[in-house]
Image (cartoon, rainbow, N blue to C red; front, side, top):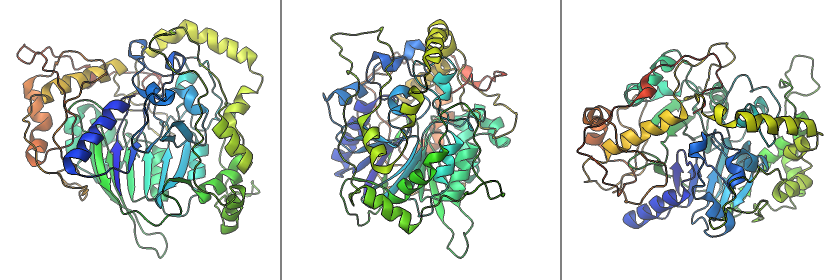
Length: 541
């Protein structure tokens, strides 16, 4: 089974599907599944744009609304997790996962599903120590604080995932597991992203929660995004008991921009399955049922139960009997029903509504699933808390502070200092992130166009000098991401791409824009300057 893995989507569904279609035709292959590792931006209309943590000038509809409205249908089954640039009010409708459009499935805050016998798990959001122990209390309209905290992962989801005992084939997270950079070509990573050096050297880059899950789940593959760079690693885990040691192949990819390493094909043997479609996972649902009463929907801090004499139960692993009860709840049918339904009107380019307020809706998919399994719709519960005063305050603060808060420095990468009081000193604003990509894009467009026949994914041994790649000639579609003239000097191109280009050609989407290549470039690389901050939540990338 051939699986396409994509880094940060940022709403560029049309371009991603076009690239896959080009690859399929060129290499005479068929891609079975697309996995997107966050920043999906399932924006349905103008109200959803107000629920996405990006500067106002980058609030554009992109192309997801076409798939939501039915104008288009995803040509490939697509599974995604959330990142830190999302239409959060939309994703909150589906805390346990569900269809955001026909053939496009969201895994929820955390989730495990099966496709052709392959178990696929994921964790949405990014890690922030100050929100990690809080309940899921956010709802729209968000204030400047909840606009960001809504996409911060919680220890509740991590606790649930740590109850999983059966092997996981693929796991996705938006930010990287902490210390993963020590298991790949670290120097090549730092050559591409120089401003990460201090965090790599102090082991503060990456998510400690994802690090815990990596050690516990030990999946065959782990895919991430967030840092907008391609990086591969191989981790050999210590054996558990008498079992043979397991190996995890890690791959992080860039965002969808011309000549960036944002897509890769992975060839994984499929297994016998009761369905050719997407299926629920009985073990995961048994864990959800067992932990349902632990859910917290307030900012109150929650600590997972431990075997310390203070808790009646601390082990919520699923037994065979628990999984049989799940099968009974589902009437023996594991296939995920095609029960997508729209909960808000889609964007209409002919009748724009720029002042549309954010929507707050329950989703029939969640209502149906909760009724079958006896789960709590936590988004509905938050909305029923009687927060009229809170909503009013939230809306007022949001109107007053919206533009100012979103143009503040945005953390890149996220603070991943665990439970310590330290903070991440390396940050660039969201605007810097866009400028960096535009500069690099202009330079890379001048690279030679000859390419070779692709090889399927062969991940390197630790400290390998070449990342895994799928090779192809880039197609030349246009791009809807905001662009500026190229600004990166030619000398930097060689340092960034020279050795890798000599070793292999990598899947990168072309650009039909010629640009002004012969003019003197204007250097603007603020991302390589270290900024200081006292608030680690002012800088989410």
